[in-house]
Image (tube, rainbow, N blue to C red; front, side, top):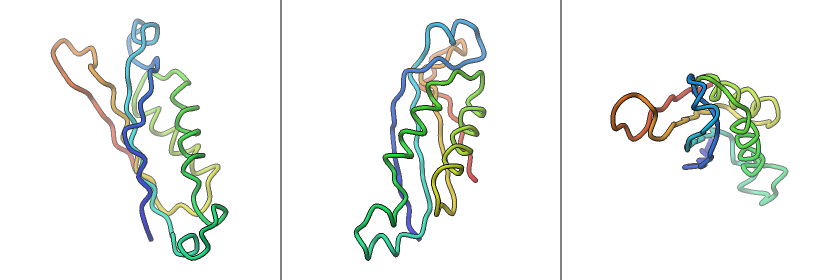
Length: 116
């Protein structure tokens, strides 16, 4: 087994509970950890034997383009979409962070982490 880490994917998206957040938008960071058996890919040096992490990024980007009210909803959609399309995955952990959330004080980010 091995891990693929795609870290600090940055998106300007329109997610949030408040109407204004879905109009003005905000910066979001996404980290993705994919656990998979890498033995065959390590031996063959062939993309068809590996989890295509370019495709994983494309899936994350497509989901980040769709508005949501909750970070939990975004993370859950991304997990479902990746499992539906990519094969050979044992486990995924995703972290979705909203930078500078409008919570009434100086806060760097708020994040949710989900695994499946």
